[in-house]
Image: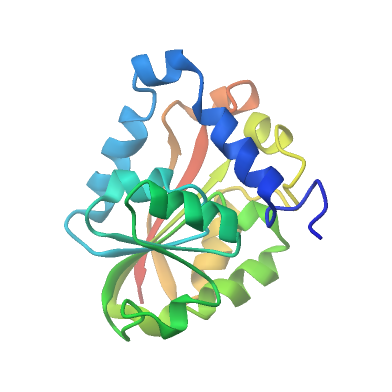
Length: 200
């Protein structure tokens, strides 16, 4: 049974769902800048979203996103919301597991949940599904966001994400702090490191 600090169980899915619930978040459409940014970075590429959770980024990428996550409860939630998503064990046998199909791969709030070497190992397993000119986007929380979640394992700044991308065969084309300048990350838990890299 997953521990309380694991991302694999029903409790983690419930936690993610609870974070989405406040009415003010929906009324103010707080996801608008993040949605705009992802669409801008990927354009019209079909994107494989690794560690998709409840599908927040999949919704931003619709209708060109396919999600994968190890948490079956989160995948069930994605499907209830009308998104295409698979567990890590289901995906290889799915109709969407086509070599060279995807022009982009996203790992948003994945790398910090494990040692970076493990993140490289996991993402390497999906490289065959990417087109030769594919784009990789890695997103991780800054200090305040990192401290806010007990399931975080290893902090990843832009240098760490650049290293992960390089090990996967991608060359960085943009490194940024989003949506606010870098100093905000020490107090604003939704400020993120965003690394954009293209296949070398």
